[in-house]
Every structure is written in C-alpha cells, then in structure tokens.
Length: 410
Image 1 (cartoon, helix red, strand yellow):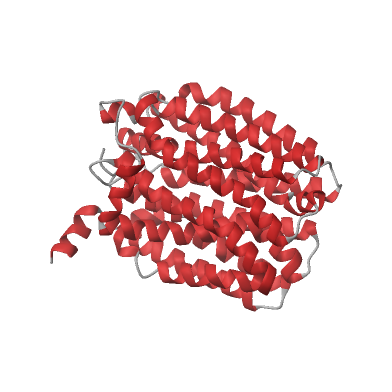
Image 2 (cartoon, one colour):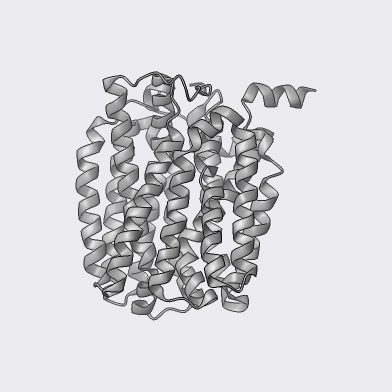
C-alpha cells in the first residue's frame, strides 16, 4: 500500500458505488463512537459525584480507558492481519458499546471498580477499531484517489458534538446517567450492526497475503526509523492535547474557572465543534499547504489555545480559547496516520504510530489527575502546553517519505 497524493480541491474524482458504501460504513462507525465517547465525557462531573471520587481517584478510574486502549491498539494489527478489517471493527465496536453501558450502570451503583472496567472496555473497543478503520480508510483513498482520513476523523468529532449537545440538555434536567448511557450504547450498537457488513472483510489480511504477520514486536521495530519516531512524537503530543480535553475539560472549567457543570459541558461541546470544523476543512488545506506545514500550524494554534486556558483568569476568554485548542488538535491523528501509511508495511507502521497516540491516553489521565490534585487542573495543563509546542519542531517528518529520505541522505 502506498500513500495517496493530495488531490486538488477543484478536481475530485467521484466515488464508485462500492467505495461510497465502504466510506459511509466507516463514517457511521466513527460517528457512533464519537457520540458514545462524548456522552460519558459530558457526564463526567455527574459520574464523579455518583462515585464520590476525588480528582486523583478520577484519574485512576480514567486510567481504565488508557489500559483498554493500549491493549486494543497493540493487538489490533495482528487481528487485522489474521481476520481482516470487518471482523476487527465489529469486535471493537460492540465492545465499545458494551463499555459505555457498563460505565452508566457502575455510576448508578457508586461502584468505582465497575466504572474502571467499563472504561477499559470502551478503550479496548476503540483501540481494536483504530488500526482497522484507518487501514480501511487508507485503502479507500487508494481505490478512489480521494482524501478520506481527515473527514473520517471528522465524523468522530461530529459525533462528539452531537453527543455533547444531547448530554448538555440531559445534564440541565438532571436526567439519570444510567439511562442516558444505556440508551446511547443501545443506539450505537444498532447503528454499527447496520454499517459493518459494508466494510471490506479482506482489507489488511489480503494486503499482507498471510494470516501470520508480525505483531507488537514488529511495531516496536518501526521506531528504529527516525521518520516513524518523529511521527510518533507528533501524534503523542497532539493526542495528548485532544485526550486531555476529552478527559478533563468539563472538570477543568468547573474546578479551574468556577463555571457550572452545564457550562463546562457547553465548553466541551465548543471544543468538539472546533475539532469537527478542523477535520472537515482538512482536505483542501492539506492539498494546498502539505502535511508538514498544516501540522506545524496546528501544533502552534493548539498551544496558543491551551496557554490562554491555563493563564487567563477569565472564564469567558478561556472558553473561547478552547476553540483554538480544538482547531489545532484536529488534524493530529488523521494526518500523522496517513503519513505513516506511506511505507512498505502500512499496517505495522500505522499501528506503531497509533501506539504513540495511545501512550498519551495511557499516561495522560493519571498524570494530569495527580498533578491536578497538587497544583490544580489549570497548572497540570502546563505539561500539555510544553509537549504540544515542542511537537511543532518535528513536523517535517510528515512530508512524503521520498522527500524525508532525500533530506536524510543529504
């Protein structure tokens, strides 16, 4: 598999009926995952209260999401090689939906270990889906000659907007968390059951020509290549920017800026909306300016937004700055994973870079929770600010592989 050259915004070949169905199926899965993710995020303050957990304890509970995500993403490439994209996505999607339901039930029962286990299932489902969805998306790009990954991740962000808006309304009327999350889980499972049969069963498996491809050791071996290491560092930074907002933004606004739980959810919805705009606008920006320039600007814009949230004492100004935070973080995952697919073994390369992103999800929640317990969540976000700003120095690695190789050989 090779990467897709940027297509001019003015000349976009139409999708065939088959590739259009495959694309719609992936969009539906990502939309459902986005809705489910935002649904429990916006209820985080209510879940925290039901569990009677401190900030540090919530960090440990959120660690379940990270553990599940890392387990899923480390095993996903091997599952894709053996069973293909469709089955991998199906297992991941229904595991995710079950996890959302378990979080709701556990919160209702004030059972912190159950909430940890539910988030572990959520993370496992997302991790299993991650490689399969992106490899299938890259295959659709090759088949169609069109950029797909930014809009694919845009559907996830659109789902977070829809889930957040619904959650805001349910927060405002104190709707029970258990019924909210159970309903989202059931609806998501139904949507995924409709979509998944249109996903290619052989993507990944057919590309490798074998059911016994290398696993996590091969992913680790990819880190010997400087380009992959730099791409991993970029996605780690921008995934930390995205993940820290997803995990902590409502509580950051409530505890750090003194707003209500409903207002905190509104700010998170603004973040999700900014992510959505950034991802749906990605195709023409990437075609005009290229991966490296867009990623560099993204890191700097996100860092600027985080800085205002951390240093400004105005809740209103911080709320507007969250839009910059989201716009800057929007293209981190899709662009770096698309760049990673420009390799001789795209499944393994994409998996290796995705692991770096999930490392941010693994380390981020407990680290920020621990720091937040001692210096407040606003102070804890200084770590995110420094890492994101530093990533802007590495973005030349996102250029096409041939260009990076020429620079390295010079």
